[in-house]
Length: 255
Image (cartoon, rainbow, N blue to C red; front, side):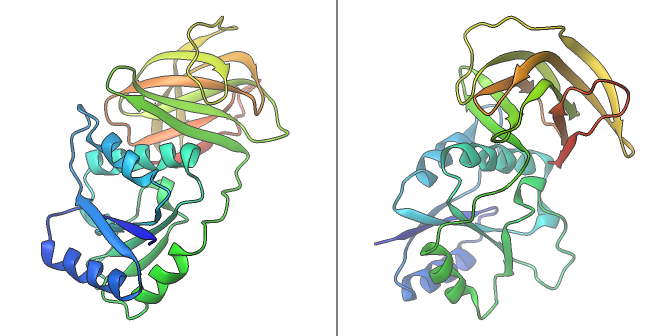
């Protein structure tokens, strides 16, 4: 039996039971958990193992964007970017609990996720369709993934998409702190590396937001990536190819 995994952002057992009942009526095995905000202990990493189970074909997030605290937004973003690397075809459905209220923006990593009110009459049909159809592959000119465990901390992997090369990489955060960087094979944190013309602590401005960035001139391809270790709770990311002059064509992701 195909399964759905339900992440409830608060402990609203009544609504969770209603959602599980709908899934059961449509022939799906429901399971899930209540979200726990504990970035220090990386509570979200345990959820990753559940979502990597191939029997789970749909991830349902139950909550409203307006209620998301910075820690929740960042934890969900980290989990989503891990899945982008390890299980990009997993379908995701966001169910808003307060459809009549101002819903608020979701974290940028969820911008393309299907979003429906929890009381929509189409929820069951959405479950059935999305659980039986893999999500479409995201098409970006970059790769942005996350590697994390309690021993190594949180590392962002950045690089160009297929058939593109970068002459260096730049990675900046709004709030939080970059602690280290490295360059090496895609998908694998490097044990050691030589940094070419490294930059640290570069101040950047995008719109009205300030970013603190690190980077280096190491050449990147779809087989080579840059890695940046981050502490704290960033509220935004800025990344891309290290610019040659003052003009920079960088990508921005709200957290």
